[in-house]
Length: 106
Length: 459
Image (cartoon, rainbow over all chains, first blue to last red; front, side):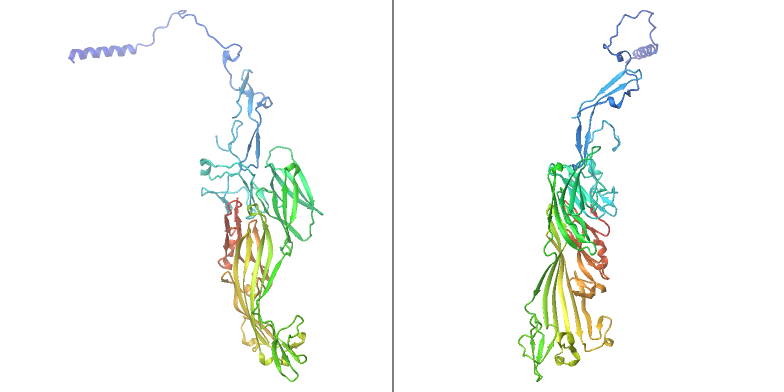
């Protein structure tokens, strides 16, 4: 590489670096944006704003359960009867209904 | 989540009691070489399995084993107060696994002429009480205390032992059997008391010389010795004249006495626990032949002359406890001598001579040796196999499957020579170190037998 080539290369690099620091492009003129449309799932209040925390369970009595399952102690003497939760109903902060559904245990 | 915390969406993987091992010195010795405080301390070394037939085998995950847990497919009931999961139900209650494999708490109660078993459904939470009962006629005898000596692994059989309230001797033994589903169960009680309650087998060796009578005619001709008949008359002696009677010249006899000390259900098989003492006695009497008819030794009550004598008696034998067919025994031997009208007086003897009165003295030649070690002074008052002064050797129940040989009564009371289980035993090194065998426990499944100076129990 000749001395001239080296000088040219350094200049080119310097200009690139200066260009990178040039800042954001100028703001577009008002109304320059094109028309666009949003979409949402039908019949859903949440669609417009999501679930608002906190979720508060409506009442324990509102829970529904899967069929009872039993589990016994290893020695067989004691039996626990367990009713697995199927659904729990909540109200969110905007008093909208939220339901969580659980699968039955395998 | 920290183990032990609860959340509705948790899944229960295992539950029950995973803390099993030997209870000793107040803690459970776990298989990972750590210890754990028990929920409650067993009241004795009694340990019972509660096994539901067909209950699937349990496996212990590595992570649980690392914590010292062992998951078992059977439960263990501990102590003679029958504690399950650390809660004592009382000696008169146990867990009955019914014909359908359902557990019930069986409670035995009695009233005049009746024995009642009441079943309470066991092992359900927050459910209505469910009970059933069945009664049979039964004779209760005052002064006898009932104890449930053992229970089998399903609680379908229980050994009921009645002991004299004052001396603790076994009086009656019953096998109680429960059968059927809980709702329609039945109770049956069978009398297993042996007849006779105490069996004594006596034997006279043929080398005995029972005859020890002499006859003197009015002409002072002396003949003998003659044997006695059942009325004390000399057999074969001339009539008239005078008679001199001494103790048998050689009495050689044995006796085997078997008593019941409890009942067990090792391997779910009912068996009486027996205590047998065998003693072979050899007494050789030397009569002062020069004084057969000395008026100084006329012995009024016998109606005959009674010559001075010296007698040496040796007793050898054994004491044995049989538990579920397994025998544990110790040998014993003792030798003593006695004089009637001795040719010396008490000024010539030391304290080892016992002067009953001025004409009769006894002396221990060799003190009692049991299991090869000489017993302390109180036991040297031995008179015959198994008894001495006011004490006796006897078998005692230590736990449901552990029995001991003890001195009961007298100065040596409480001395223990051995404890035994259905497959193993432990002996005292000497009476002074017998405390190491004051407690014992047999594992209801493995049969492992452990002794200790304080309560030991498989939990």
